[in-house]
Image (tube, rainbow, N blue to C red):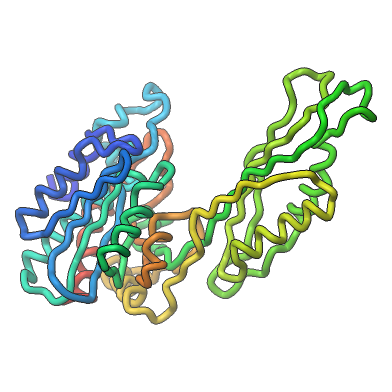
Length: 376
């Protein structure tokens, strides 16, 4: 069994449902420490984080990943136990195989190969891992970056191992991500009997025209790197459960995925202006998960990753800013160039999550080649 496949097996067996690490980080730290990596265990709240570095100067190339996974769901719906790695038909099955224990294992093996080949390499290579990516992400990379700000730690280039590919390894890389702005909107009404609407105020009726306006609004046109900003409502709740009671309150969960053509402050102001214009009595609790970020065309890391995909995968990768969010949103504001490169994402978070064994065994070579292009 290859080193990357063996390590992925070992990681999948650890039931590291977010925010638990279940021993993944100590296993990795021990391996890297024997090769001369400096190890920092950073625990914030109930979250374990690992920062392992080799080298003493700049530039700093960091690989970023997470050891936590989402819950498996009903285990009896899996063809094989979710936390028992199982190989069949050229695929490795198990929770986290694609998202993203396979990438983490590939990063470790790549770093082991690189520092063995270049023990006195210029610059610094680092591995930043957290057990708080799939959850609320409060004490993971977000807090590590705050710690780095206090200690003066820099990151110049960052490769995130999130599963990025569509059909085969290297066919798509993420060169940026949209920002995410969420809101918990509370619309106030007056509860009453449905037979006496004149004595009540229905927040559902009051919110409906405003919701139609919000959904129809063209927030921006996007730009060459990002699609237009989108607005979505993920949940609306109102009512007491009785069909003869006008509710006194409505709560809606809303989200903007926004490009660099808009700002979080601007979207908040415009959304609230629409609500006011429709006479809605409301309050909103806004939460900004992250600003949009982009690795500019021609950037050193972006060109290196594109070149590696061409040379080792035989494909010119699509350079995308689509998808959700990643922990790269915390690293980019440090001034780092951030690129995401990982395996096919077709089964992430699903029952019978899996990764191609061939892709998994090829991935360390891609990561090692990036190290060579940036630092060797």
